[in-house]
Length: 175
Image (cartoon, rainbow, N blue to C red; front, side, top):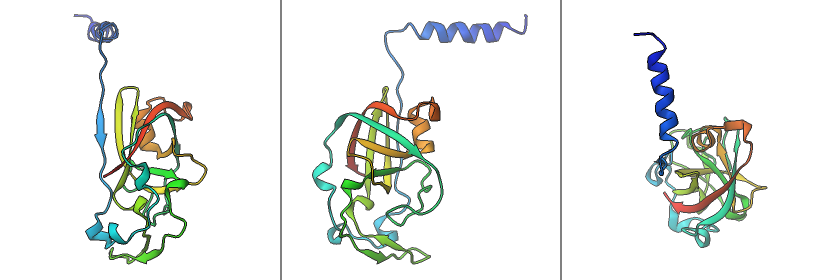
């Protein structure tokens, strides 16, 4: 059998699948890096600007991506977990206090409800990704989420060449 036949079969199979009347979709949910027990943050004592926005899908949303490294606006490492989000600055309470955590390094964390078990669910091109919010995008409106590059690439295989992915449904949820 000629060596090109398996590749030809694969190409023909992919072409045939593109004519089917349905599409494939995927869903992924990423948990926050730390639990409230690990951080010693309490939802009941946290500042709150996000609750009014929870579980309210926003259609026509967009998402972008940011680089890795450093600590985000919540005081957590922005690349842990590798798929995460920077939420709109309007979701953060400007009066939230920084409190000492009970993490091994005793770092200070922002005691804001947006930083405590809050995620953003993004539905885009038939796929759904839910990731924790661990950073702030000051210039982003509520319908715009800035994602870690790995999260962006999971939703948009075109990656950086796309720049801004549009027509997403964005829903802020409890993780």
